[in-house]
Every structure is written in structure tokens, then in C-alpha cells.
Amino acid sequence: MEPQSTIQDFRALPKVELHAHLSGSISRECLHEVWLQKKDRGEVDLADPLEEMPIGKFDYNLETFFPLFSTYIYSLCNDLEAIRYTTNSVLRDFEADGLVYLELRTTPREIPSAGITKDGYVQTILECIRQFNAHSKMKTNLILSIDRRNTLEVASEVVELAVKYRSQRVCGLDLCGDPSVGDISVFETAFLKAHENNLKITIHFAEAPQSSTPKELWKLLEYNPDRIGHVINVPDDVKEEICRRRLGLELCLSCNVHAKMITGTYGDHHFGWWKGKACPIALSTDDVGVFGSTLSNEYKLIAEHFGLGRKEICGLAREAIEIIFGGEEEKDRLREMMWE
Ligand code: IMP
Ligand code: ZN
Image 1 (cartoon, rainbow, N blue to C red):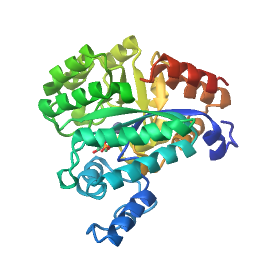
Image 2 (cartoon, rainbow, N blue to C red):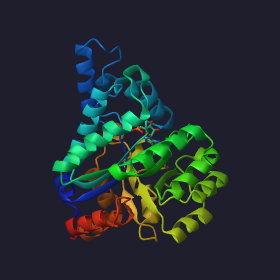
Image 3 (cartoon, protein in one colour):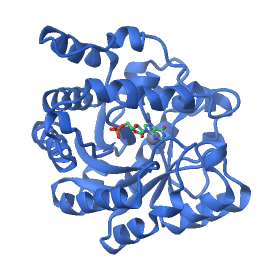
Image 4 (tube, rainbow, N blue to C red):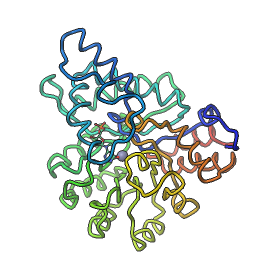
């Protein structure tokens, strides 16, 4: 906050996290613990997570990042015990970082080998959230993700699950996944159905050049998102429209720098362009387990590289309240906690 501010100062700042993928937020230590438990039971022939993802390695790019889930993390987190263990660990880590509100997102996953349906997967995570919320100052809601690789049928199933569990802390829908694959125009009726059911929507937007054609970006805006994530490769006319709509922006500094999604480094991040425009900003971690930067550290980096003082940092943290999917009562609770 001031030049001499430490990470503890940023941890003490009450914070809101709106863009965090569950499986990407699991720490390596936690993955290692799951691996040890499975190894003891003779259930695993995967490499140790600390070898697969050595501590201190954060240079995952768009080619190496997505396979990490499909070939490794999902193979390790493949039963109810591992899902519960890792979800609880993620919630504890976010709480310890000083969050007072979290919107965690995840892609409903069926795991036939463990008899887990997508519905069962969502229920399991909601149960962890319910138990955690009961004793924590940090309140968590869940966003369900549609993967860009999905068919319309699979996407529609995600919408159905979001509608089914909306009274149990599912607060919205996300569109995510490898930006180099998939045709997002197939999801038209799924998003229509989401709107008919008043579901809030966030979309990974202009994340990589391949997913930033004017055709794709205007189509995504037709889906009427409430918030958009990353917002990197955006032409001027689309930027104007985003400002006109005052969309919420989920900006992920370290992820974009480590994965080389932007040119240059922290000080070159497009946060500098969006700051002070019409759109509320929520600084976000995206995948703290992979990129290693906590939300406190994201605020610290912003303060350092964009010269923000205490007042501006507190103001920025409060901006995120206005774009949560969690409802007016929750906004009031947060405004009280984050008044400074
Ligand atoms: P899960 O949805 O909880 O399984 O979290 C991991 C999934 O989130 C990955 O398989 C990706 O589909 C998605 N994801 C995580 N980070 C990103 C990102 O930066 N861009 C797009 N998708 C992402
Ligand atoms: Zn993301």
C-alpha cells in the first residue's frame, strides 16, 4: 500500500476473489498429500506432484497449462475423498489469505471409475462449501463452468445443474477452457436458457489471439455476460462496447505474465488501461496452485507496479463488491467489512 508495505499488510486487507478455478487453485503441497494417501493405499501410478510441478515452477503457457489438468490433476483428484480433501484445502488457503468473499468456479466432471456423476461432483463441492461457510468469515459461492470444448448438449447440462443448485450457493455460469479450441457459437441456446433462468454469467474473453477474432468477441457479447475475464486482446470498438455496458472485469496479472499471454511484464499489464474507466475491476488469481500468486500478492504487485497507495488499493478492493454474483445482502455485508 505504501512503498514499504509487506505481504502481511495485503493479507490483512479484506478481499473479494471472483475468478478462481477450483482444480487450478489446489496447492502443490495439497496435491502431494493426496498423492501420498493414494500411494499408501497402492492406488496411484502417477509421478509425485512435487516432481510433476516442482515448487517454484510457474512458467506454464497455454500449450502446457491445459494438459496439466487433463493428463495429471484430474487423474489424481479422481474420487470423492480427493475432491473433498482438495476443496477443503483450497477454501482454507483462500481464507488464510484474507478473503472475505469467494466465488469459486469448477467444471462439473463425471468420474465413472468412482461412480461419480456430474450432479454428485457438484453436490460434493457444495457440501464442502456449506460446511466451511458455517464457521468462516469468508463466504463462498460456486460458479459452474462450461468448457469451450463441450458440445451444446454438455453445456446445457451445466446450465441445468446451475439452475438446480442455485438455492444452494450456485451463483452463476462461466465459459472457460483452452482458448485455441472450440467454437463458442454453438452455445447460443445454452446461454439463452441461462438468461431465461436469470443466471449470472461470466466469460473468459479475448484470452489469446485465436479466441479474439471480432466474430468471436461480438458473439460472446451477444451472450450478455455480467462479467468478463482476462480481456487481453480487445479491439477498440469492442473496448468501447465493454465500457458502455460497464461490464465487470476479472483481471489476472500473474497468470497473464507467467503464461506470456501479454507482451512485457507486470507494469505492461492492461490493468493500466482499464483502471479508472467505467468498468469495475476485480483482481483475480485464476489458478493460484499453478501460477503461485495469492490474491494478496496480486494486490501487492498492482500497488508496486502501478504506484497505488493505501487509499487506492482499498478502493480497488471495494470495487469488486459491486460485481459479485452473490446478491444484495452479501454486498451489504461486504461493504460493512470493507468500509475503510
Ligand atoms: P476445474 O474447472 O475446477 O476443473 O478447474 C480447471 C479447469 O479450469 C481447466 O481444465 C480449464 O478448463 C479451466 N481453466 C483454468 N484456468 C483457465 C484459464 O486461464 N483460461 C481458461 N480456462 C481455464
Ligand atoms: Zn480463468
